[in-house]
Amino acid sequence: MNPPVPTGSFRRQIVVLTVCVTAFAMVVLTVLVQLLLAAQTSRDVDRVLEDRADAVAGSTTSGSPEDPLTVPDAELDRGVVVYDADGALVAGQAPAGQAEAYAELSRTGETRLRDLGDDRRVLARPFTTTAGTTGVVVVDEVLTPYEEAEFYALLVSLVTGGLATAAAGALAAWVATRALRPVAVLAGTATEWSEHDLLRRFDLGPPTNELTALAGTLDNLLDRVTAAIRSEQRLTSELAHELRTPLTTIQGTADLALLGEDLTEPAREHLEEISAAAHRMTHTIATLLELARTERTVADSAVASLVDVVDEVVRSTPADVAVEVEVPDLRVGAPHALAVRALAPVLANAVRFATTAVRVRVDGATAPDIALVVEDDGPGILGDPERIFEPGTTTGGGSGGGLGLALARRVARSCGGDVEVTRAAGPTRVTVRLPRV
Image (cartoon, rainbow, N blue to C red; front, side, top):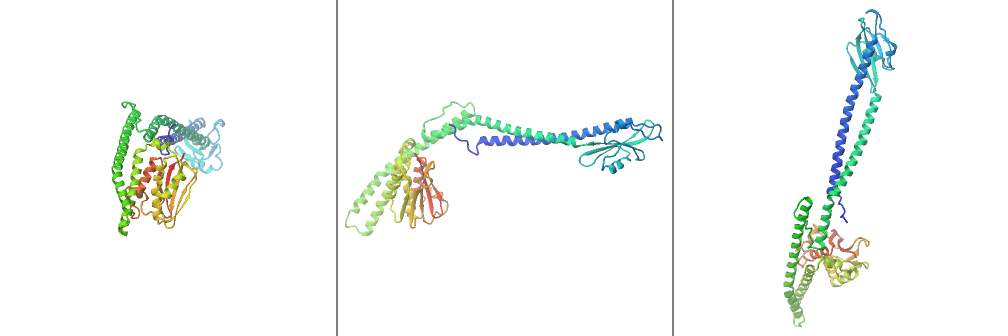
């Protein structure tokens, strides 16, 4: 099964870019079409007016220069008006409301075009008959049909542009999905191998295209990740092994010395502090050894009881405040020892800073993972909450080495979970997430 496509994926960027470019192109094309259509319509209207005026002028006659003009009835269409040289009406009738404009044009000495309102264009043209009689013909053309044609052309352009944009987006999504599906498969497979099988590789051979080159790059990356993990595991195991023997000796010697009855009170306090420090270091080393030796496949196959894990941690954590536990009987998908070591430093830290009580509960019992919330009524965490998970960082001047919370997060992540601060201000909340079975 292919991994889910993230919201900000490259495929989405390609689709969005394609849709935007197509939409912009269609808008530009629509504007150009409308401009060209408007210019052509204007030329057509002018040509129609000129043809009508020429036809009327050519058919108008007179007997002599002193005789009146005669216009055939066949030429007197709507909006056709003929005037003599003095501006007197010879034939036709001006449209309602346009008499004044027509009277002004009746005395023109040159061809004139004029728009009357938004829906009418008028042409006035002087003419001379074969007998030498002059006059002026005024014709008009209603623009409404032309404007309706332009509107329908705009509507068709917008619909066509929308369909073209949608088709381009769908085609881009289909092409991008098919083209990027192998990349998603490679990425998902590499992620799965890095978690479960560090020795698997794609091995597609020498790079012949972008995908084989990507596979080779991922193989090299997996090699480096594997080498780093193996080196870290080996170093951790060797250091822990070398430190275990002297620590056992120190703790045994301190415990043996504490059995003496002739110890002074200061000496006994010093020995108890030495024994406690050695005990803490022993637990830390045991955790490091288990992390180095436990493979993820072993962690995935292990199951532990959440109630047992919490009970053991509470019993082993000295507390001067009340620890309230409210956890259901859930199954944790991790080894019991690792689950304990992921929770123990978190609870110990909460107990150290709590004023009256610490509460341990599960947040969202039906969630995909188990969110174990440890809440204390202490002063909260000052500064960046993430700093407390850095190795060597102690909280509140504690006597530890600053490894507890760092190891807790590392242990939880090795099992597929995490440790995070979900509320830094008091009451402080630290959530230990563990996989659910």
